[in-house]
Image 1 (cartoon, rainbow, N blue to C red):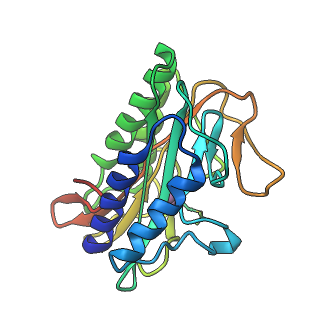
Image 2 (cartoon, rainbow, N blue to C red; image 1 turned 90 degrees about the vertical axis):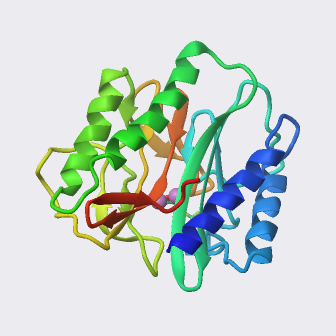
Length: 236
Ligand code: MF3
Ligand code: CO
Ligand code: CO
């Protein structure tokens, strides 16, 4: 899983090199697709429950599961990129949100604080802790920074399959929920909104957007529970 996670990281780095105003989301998808294949991996989002691309690209008020298209990235956008990479039978899952050019101070804070919220959740990971400890840490940090927490989508266990138990909500009660044990691997992924928490799905049956059209950010890492804490498998 460490190897799958590392290829996921390298693919994010490759996408980042090409991410600038004027590039289409389809071009980014094809760069990621070819990079994963070239390195012996499988872009496992492609065809997953019929998803038509290798990566999800969600812009501004799009929360997750945006489908790459001819839409071009432009100055002032925030762009969330989320995908899984399968390698040697194991999955990895990571997401980042990028600021393109200049955005408002509050949008910049949304993005920075969503990344920080992810690390607040990750810090809770150790044997003996519970899923609710992760959930509560993320929710508390989000609310302290005036952000709302999307509830309809959650993090998850990960292994030979992209989505395994347990669910990891980004809200909840400390000391509640499944117990963490050494060797478990978790995909932790806060989705935070600048406005209200409610979301809806577009006609394409994939793209999730905020109901009030406020911007939304998403960060995700695949994290393994170790003997005395955790290791981030999709990190540098
Ligand atoms: N990467 C997503 C997650 O965080 C799932 C992608 S849905 C797919 O769980 F259809 F694109 F695969
Ligand atoms: Co993901
Ligand atoms: Co995930």
